[in-house]
Amino acid sequence: PIQSVCQSVPVFRLNMSGDCSNVIITPGCMVRARRRSNRSARVDDGGQVESPSSPPSFFSCRATVATVSESVVPLATVIWEDMAPRPLPVPVGGDVTRKRLNRSFLVAPLLHARTSADNDQEEELPLSSLEALLPFEHDDGRGRQLSSSPSPVSIKEQGDALLRLKDYSAAIARYEAALAATSSLDLGGTVIINDGTGRAVLAEVDCIDEEDNKCTADVTIVSSGEEKTVDVKDILLCLLENDKEERLQERMLLNLSRCLLQLASADGSADAIRATKYRKAAVLGCTLALSCTSYAGEGSDNVGVDTETKARLIRAGAYLDLGKAKHATADVKHVLKTDVNNAQAKKLVRDIERRDIQRKRTDKRLAKDVCRWVNA
Image 1 (cartoon, helix red, strand yellow):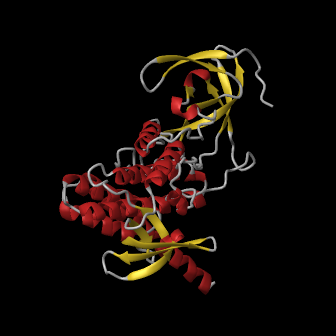
Image 2 (image 1 turned 60 degrees about the horizontal axis):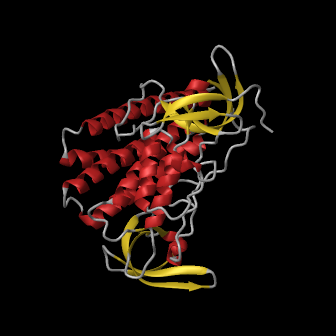
Image 3 (image 1 turned 90 degrees about the horizontal axis):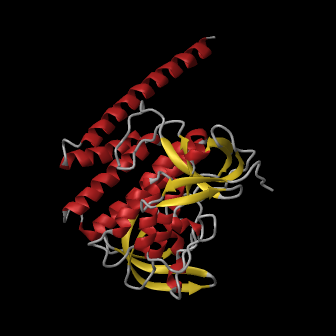
């Protein structure tokens, strides 16, 4: 059990609306605080690609207050929450079709939480550095439960607020919940499926069949007219009808991908497996955003062009960190075809060239080492 070493200490903080609220910090309460990333992220909150030489950045993370000590500088010992995103239950009312995409996350990886033995989760921080959770995070006392049935737009706005605070894990959970709330499998609807070769393609739903606890859909591939039957697990996303003006799903997917890349740096800096999963999920998120743009009418307006440019730049950064320079180069070249002066694309070109030089040097050293070993 968590016990206080002294009386609780009141702390005044500003909330999102700018109103001053009296937050009482007591053992057992949840707070938010800033942590330092071990290395800089590839893409910042605005989609800007950062230089590998950038200084360590900060991000926010939730924690539970263990003890509060009163001294010259009041301190609190906190236990950090694991940064792996956790699903939010989404109330869907009586619409059972939304249950057919029965996955915890549509894009983000679902990871096992680390135990205290796996990671240093305890830290002593100045009391003044702690912040209260946002009002909508208090539904169950731990920022996890969505009460009632909020609209996808309101859930996305909650994710936007968390993204501005750089709480990437919490933001991902909100974006995923909003995305799931808009992804309803319906007859005549349009979906994005995995065609079996790793490509995401648009398809129209002709029939939905549920039998023996298995759900399949007969679909027609939009690009080729081919008809096929797919398992629902191969449906990556159900597109929101009448979204060609607001482009809600596109914007959620872009922000979700940005958060995943940031989390690859913040959470994956000491865990290569997690970092790889986050980056692969960012690639998926950007690919889905591009498919949404294609469905809405690629290049038909400035919004579509802007979405495509951002998605390709974010995906190029993820590809580069995954060691897939060829794929990264293809995305960058596509951007430069329409915008030859794009600063982010030019910066990525330099990063790709620098990585290529480093790779060749490494290969050369390895070849010399092998030759010495053979001749020994």
